[in-house]
Amino acid sequence: MAAGVGLRERKKLQRRRQIEAAALELFARDGFDATTVETIAAACEIAPRTFFSYFATKDDLVLADYTDRLRRILDAFAARPANEPAWEALQAAFATIAADFESQADELRARFAIMATAPSVRARSLELQLGWEFALAERLAERADVADDAVAQLLAGTALAIMRTTLHQWLTSPTGAHPPELMRRGFALAGDGLHHL
Image 1 (tube, rainbow, N blue to C red):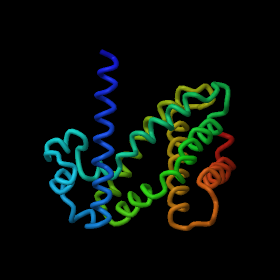
Image 2 (image 1 turned 120 degrees about the vertical axis):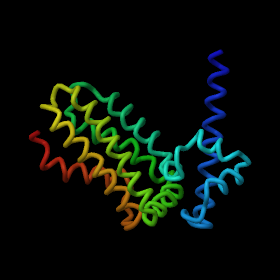
Image 3 (image 1 turned 180 degrees about the horizontal axis):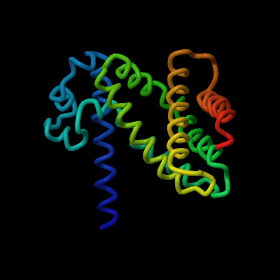
């Protein structure tokens, strides 16, 4: 039974990734606005209603990596020692995903290019990141060294701003610096003003 469930989940994930890959290809070729859900479904040989069982909207498809990225941040944060200062634990957790950026460079550039030209995707991205902020702030508020919910929210929001800045800087202004290095620099700069919290 468990093996059957595992296989179903793997097949679902495989289909989801197939839809993502086909859509990103179509977006690059025809443009985000000109590519319809019907076109994506046809390219994947699925019905449009099947598309909607994987993605609520076309915008969500562009941002499909967000769910996995948030899970990885939260898992990495939870794995940090309980006595480690919260800011250092955040830095280590975010370094985990920064290390993935280079191996996902082409895909991240494709997603970033769509966000830069499609206001609805950009707005949805910010909405999802606000959800990240609340989820991360909840975890932070559980730590003994975080004074209250306001501090937890500030720390979470700042960490996410550093991640956005790191990704933007790396994708648009190549300096030769690797994402983890840029991320560490962002945390160090922000930490100079936040360490007393």
